[in-house]
Amino acid sequence: FDQRCDGELDGTAKQSLVAFISRASEVGMIPIYDLFNHHNGKRNCKLTVTEEGVQLLVVGDGGISSGDEIYLSYGLKTASTMYRDYGFVEEW
Image 1 (cartoon, one colour):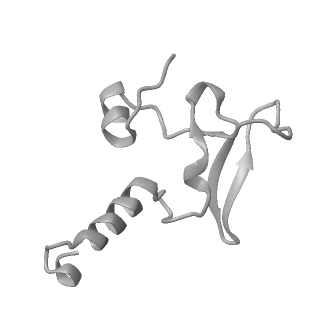
Image 2 (cartoon, one colour):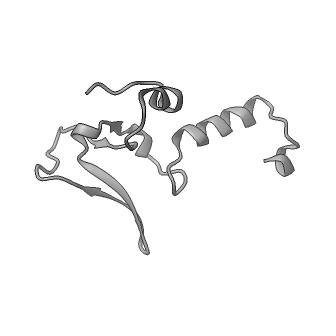
C-alpha cells in the first residue's frame, strides 16, 4: 500500500480499498459472495478452495431449494467484533 499509494488515498482509491476490505474473503474477491447473508445457526453453504478453484458447497442435511436464502458463516465472533467488522450483531 505505501509503495503504490505513497501512504495517501484519493477518493476513488479509498472507495476501492474499503470495497475490497469489506467484501474480500480469505481467497480474495469473489463475485456474488458478499450477497449471501451470515447466520451461524442457519448456515447452509461454505466456501472452499481446491486445486480446481473456489467452490461454494452446500452443507447440512436440508440442502437448498429454489427460493431458499443462502447463509454463510463469518465465524464465531464476539458481538463487538461482529459489529465492528460487519456492522451488525447476530441474534441467538
